[in-house]
Image 1 (tube, rainbow, N blue to C red):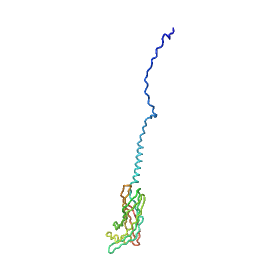
Image 2: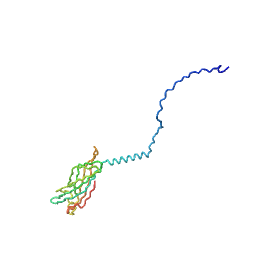
Image 3: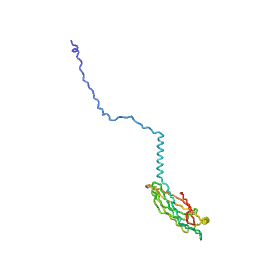
Image 4: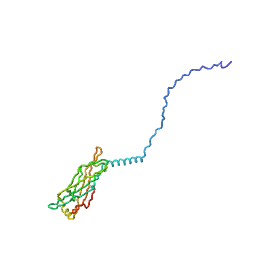
Length: 215
């Protein structure tokens, strides 16, 4: 008797399962590890600070307004005459050419340019010119003519008589300029002065020595 027929296989039972939920699409990017930038070294920070300070100082130096430079480029004596009777009087006629230099990067306007003549520190008279304009990094020339007749010398009469006897009289010229430089809506007042020591020969009406210096 066949044993396979005697013992038939057990029936197969159905298998039930629950499907997994659908998975989202895989991302199309790659995750990279975090990167922390290296901290600047103290030496590098000091270098950056030093360069920044130098740049700021350079900009401040360029933009900060400076006083105009004035110089007497020409001084001509037209006439000088002294009178001792009845009083000590002096007649002076001088012609000066003043050069005004503007070293700033913006223009300058000056309101007055005053030229005074004195003797041993005592002013004999002065003259003022009209206002003017000087371009940035430029210069301008101003002519000034001084004409004084019958100016009485109250002080230093003894010194004046001694100078007249020697034939040489020292005179002082002081040129002062009042101006204003501006950048956009900001303005800065400026003032400059130049003095000249002039020795005049009273015999031939000439200038024998001239020395000018800024103050």
